Image (tube, rainbow, N blue to C red; front, side, top):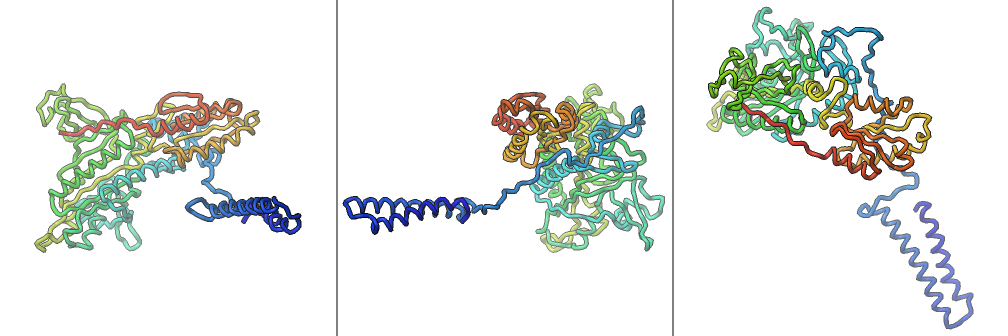
Length: 527
């Protein structure tokens, strides 16, 4: 029953005993019955009250029963002092060669301990960046599920024979693409470390073909490591030898339905990039070695971008410059003059293709039509460079000294800074830190998004500077006013504001900032 019930039991037992014994020992009189009834009713009320309390603990519709030794358990507090975050250490008076760090995002992520160079074009992705990466993956999963795509995992190694069948790898050694990484196993068989997996997924579908048309459309995607033998890796994660990519492969029964799928996936891409919050443009692209008949690219405008994008101010056409013979060519849609064409650099973060039967015909992927006859499937592929997306976001939003994240990808959204060790506020502020951390878990968009910078050996100013460099969207400082007046210092890097607020207003303001919906970036469509 628990120790908390003992006072009620003792109290009601005394009244119960007295109510029974009193009529025996007390002299008779006109008030004896009244006294007896009062005492018995009081004892019964106490017992009923205790019974209600006990049932409330037992009944899940009312409340849980808590054993006297029960401790409410929540996720452990996320502490900056426990992070594995080996930042870039540059010896005094050392010089960094320009070819070693070639972009703002690469330098900032190295300095803040988000990545660490492993080799030429390869990187360790450290825990803070892994959180951002997982958020990007979760967003992608959500938008792929909305269009009925199913996630799977394909082998990283693909037989070179499949690449020969598709025509992307010639029979002779001289036909090897320059950026293709391949290896030979102990049996002398050549395996491709895939930069893409068109051959692999088509081979899988062909192995179960022909299947009925009722099984289509079929939309299969994976998020996996890809490889490219870059001659000159640069820009950190934006052009590396090893990278994470989402590739969706779709199969339809005819060209018309393949076009419908293409439009549906591109609409999902538009929603995905709007949710991330980075301004982007969609441009007509070159099908290149992938083949097919239609292609579009998604770019974040940036001076670091290696692609030149063209926009016709007359008709609104957007295109990669690769589709123009020369940059001075007139717009193909409206025959506008050269002056009507605007140019800007962009970082490609996604690409969509209609491949038609480029791979399905060569590898035998077919379906049974309503008439019972087999027909070659129509195929599309849609890629998103996940690690490139993270780096490009940092590249576009950040200043030269401070990282800025889109709220959807920030490693943590709120950073709490505690008092400095040895200060008079240190011991008194501890309960406020625990309470603030706990209460923030209940605020919209804050659950699991709070980190406490408890490196109290550093001053508050030093840790605020670090938090700004890392780009946490919101920073809350527990200084002297938090203890004496319960006033908290709130910095919003998103809005560029600094406020001093009472406790409840601090929680409400954080929720409002994180819940505020910014207008989606303009999506530029080609005409």
